[in-house]
Amino acid sequence: MNYESMLWSFNLDHQIQMVVTKVLIFMSSAVLAVNCFPSLRARIPNGNHVRNPCPSGGVWEAVGHFDPIGWGELNPFGYDFQSAGFQWTESLCRLDSDSDGMTNGFELGDPTCTWTPNSGIHLILNATGHPGVCEPLQSHLCTEQIDVCSTLD
Image 1 (cartoon, helix red, strand yellow):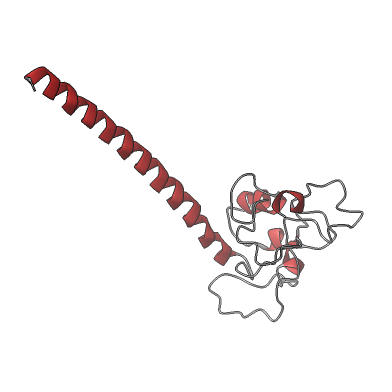
Image 2 (image 1 turned 180 degrees about the vertical axis):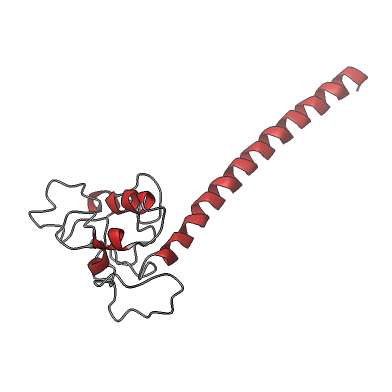
């Protein structure tokens, strides 16, 4: 093998290594970005226990997104939470982000809007609904809204 072919081989190997490195960096940052957002659940009452209103059930991990695991578009509560600086405020609590007739606070188990993160206040009520998904799903209030369940089940 002559010098030129060794150099060409080295350059090709180096280029492949650079591409692989860039892909790994991109994938790592995407994973970190997705894994950072669950910390926002601690900023809302019962944030780790918001039920999935779709027939598949379970817990809705990403309360502020239409997708329960956090991919894609924000839901109405997600936009309102973002507008509130990602803080649970009395104003956010009293809003009805999903227009289903129940306040965000009621749906998250804080109907009096007294809960604050790290306050030590233990909520007596569990989350009864989802503040970003109109429910009950068959309600006349929800017929004109995005049907999140049709894409999940």
